[in-house]
Image (cartoon, rainbow, N blue to C red; front, side, top):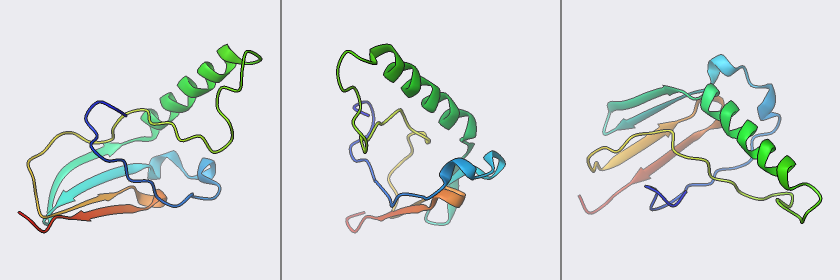
Length: 104
């Protein structure tokens, strides 16, 4: 997203993600077994979808705004925290991202 992300992890597509119960849309960030951040991300996801839809609608007919498959980053689901060896982001029904650093 060009602000605080040095890297963006892109996971596998989740079929029928719009059918997932919003109450299950939480993210838990842990590092070396310690919980660093928890967030109910359903409202953030909903706001991002509304923003993208509004953008596409505003430019409709002018040019191809977002071809199918376009990746749009709309912000972060976490907060800054000190370096750790193993960091896990569990997005519940949408999957898990994990990174392990060897030089800490």
